[in-house]
Length: 214
Ligand code: ATP
Ligand code: MG
Image 1: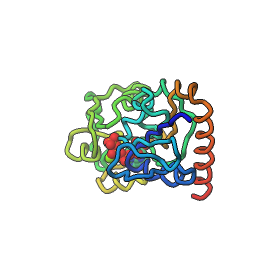
Image 2: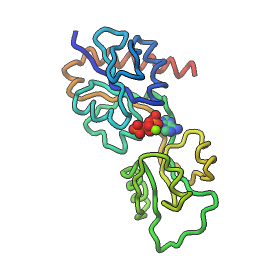
Image 3: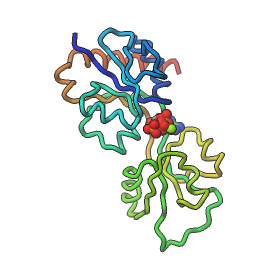
Image 4: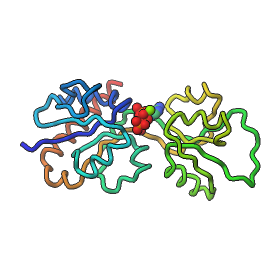
């Protein structure tokens, strides 16, 4: 049997993936807090525990055959090289524009400044509306930017909205809904077709069971 490698997004996606991976014996058999590569409980299937934004790269280059990653990451980095057969319906949130609740009217001659971890999605969103904006790339804690005058608005992930509220921000626009997806390397899908198809079917069923239980 050929070996299979599944790349998992560290953090909240991993936490939400573990229950259904356990149902099909693909949960890690090792210390996922310290190891970057661990065997799963299924012989021949190993797991990579990596940063969410790195998952598409590992799968694209075939270092992993499959991966679990947020739609936000796929949209930002492009995913044409990846086959995306399954919406796992976990780690659900949305990408939104948010502004200060007490924002003053803006001088319309000045370009809107938008702080975000998602420059591509942001550029496309405002371009579709015919609006040219100045994008400021940040790597985290976007909520701070409008409070200190770094930006007029932010584009960020929102789940419950409690972080926005805590910082005096309000959601002004929803760009899109986000959930985690299973992605597959296109070449691996051909060369390891039987194994991958079987695994896909198992993951599909296990994630549907989770949906019913939720
Ligand atoms: P990185 O290490 O690449 O900076 P991160 O620290 O932002 O990633 P997490 O916040 O654990 O990593 O996970 C981010 C992923 O989790 C997102 O890509 C998204 O798909 C998903 N997600 C679901 N709900 C939320 C939320 N409320 N806030 C942030 N991310 C969420
Ligand atoms: Mg984080």
